[in-house]
Image 1 (cartoon, helix red, strand yellow):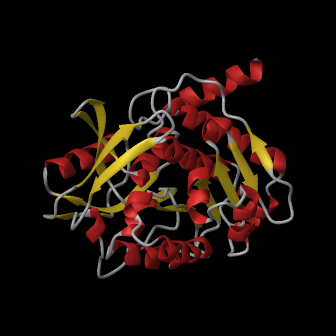
Image 2 (cartoon, rainbow, N blue to C red):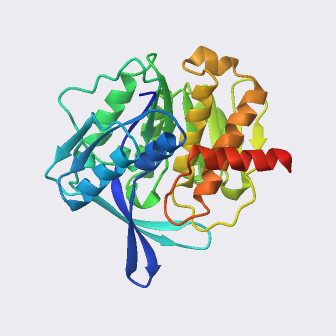
Image 3 (spheres, rainbow, N blue to C red):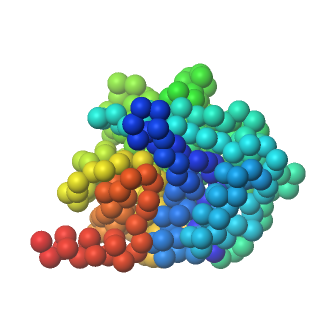
Length: 314
């Protein structure tokens, strides 16, 4: 296993019409783990799944995508459910996650990851519910210096009861990360009224070596200490659904960095801008393909390589 994910695993019910919903396996970290596995990296997952029918589906989904589930615990608590309504500009969510299996993840002993694991992802709504939030934070902090850590806030405002407390706690999560991936919507929630460059600068002062802010169909921007921002555009596509786009981007980011030998902070700091541009292009291509189909459905490696090849020949 090369990349590990820790966080929620749930069922997304997307609105078809009226009160008719279609279920999909999902959750931000689950989507990212599936994307990573499909992009060709040995992937593992840390969470707690219910023994109910949804939990069984989620376990089958992870294993069916080749994800190592040795660190997945089981519980009689119910599965987390999310209902998603698409709007012209974004998506609206309703979460049912009180006392659910993944939010109750709190093992007496934290998992000991194999030395082969070089990247760890965390973030999203698993950090908004106790006891999982505290235990995940402790788990991530224990990895510092042993492997690269990527944090994606993936904020859901409807779940944040106290924005000021959430922003304060985000500082702790930024400090635990080497790379931060966030959306422009996350940045607006973190620092209302401030520009993206200012938000990135604030985050960099807390310790991360790189901040990548995605801007939907407009692409993504990389911010690093002492370097000019680096922007890449998204490939032109016909959007069917944006669910899972950011999760797929995050996976593409760590896959591309790992393939360029980034396994520690020294390698990250030494990565030249030309390589970073290729990394960002890979991540945006993966996210773009995800957006061409319904629900979170990350692409396989051959699809991303084909899209990048078409772009280079254009």
